[in-house]
Length: 556
Image 1 (spheres, rainbow, N blue to C red):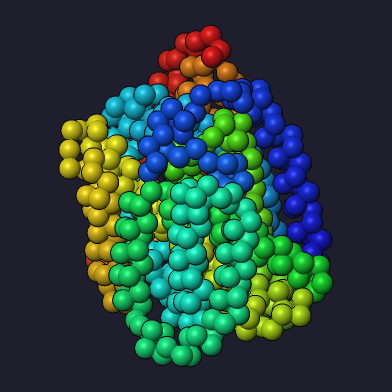
Image 2 (image 1 turned 30 degrees about the vertical axis):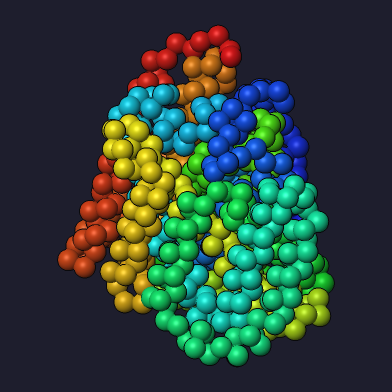
């Protein structure tokens, strides 16, 4: 099967989904109005609440949600064949993931920019708010530890990426200062900064060779440095680093998707993987595990945390929620599509593919699949005449940029979640952003260093997919309850909620049986998974009970 043709078909499906389905949701279900008050203007504080232009906020939002998970998940899930993975990425993104991100953004913007976990207190009740915020905190805790490890691993395996990533941080701060302190429009300076990043990518290998001591740092050292950086980024005003850096990143991410697509058109690679591989050696069953493995490539609870944690506080107009929330997830779905194609058409022969996917043990794992995406994507880019090593550096920097923006945003979300818990229970020190930020990042650092080479977060990584999807299910439940209270149709969020919650709980129970069978070595996974599942079922029970008893108000 021609990979370029598949990419074109999915792109058309995404365009139709945006035009018709997101238009229906924004006009008929959520009734967005351009003059509707938004918290970025009403609560502007210059730190978290900052009114932001549409194209800038889109870049910040997209870069924040586009982490490593939509690359790793699809790149593992193709072990069951490219057809199931491709269908779920396409259909799940349009009708579940994009609707989830969009609705979380709208609901948060209509509740003073509060996180979806905090909003649950107003929509369902205080107990549900506490339970949901605990699950969110556990999810972000794992994300911080694991994404720091991913970036550190990529720095060690691709030292040519170190220089451009650090250049990007410096030019982003300069860009933020020019825009918000000197009043210069962002677009043109951001292009200059992006050109500087491309130049840094070109010279990345040469600089790495000049500083062998820097490139010889261990993974553990990089994890510590990255988490220290994420703390600083989480407490700085959003306009100084996160927003301009993510905007520059969005240029790179869009460019990356463009050159990957262009490379596909030039190379016209053929998919060498099987269409369906229903029973790979050692793999769990395709249903339900395909869905939780692909995770962020189709629907992600973490995206709802970004939508309600940071993006809603910068939304300048309510109608911007459609291109940012729904459109941003479509762009991520396209990234998931590219991961599927790179992991199925980036190999020269079928034998090469089978050597990577001969069994679940061979297919599973973060580092191997990230490397498969970097190498497979680089082969697409090299078809445009770019030297393979330069293309590989470009792909590595793009992946690190994905992970780093999620790391930054995750640290900020954790700080805000802890602050919301402090407001609920009167824990005054946590209302200080430096204390809350330090506690959130410090806990992630403690998790990361519990094993050698800073990989402690991997002990809980198997819970990421299921926890992430459970959070998405609860988010859709909160939105459904709110819609019913407003007297509006809620089936468009309730049906995806039921589907994602049922399949994820099924997968979590299956995992727990395996964990408890090896309790002596997997005790942390066993206890943590049981706690998360119990909290989720408790929230779903209380939420569905509230939903059942609601007498809808007149439409608001």
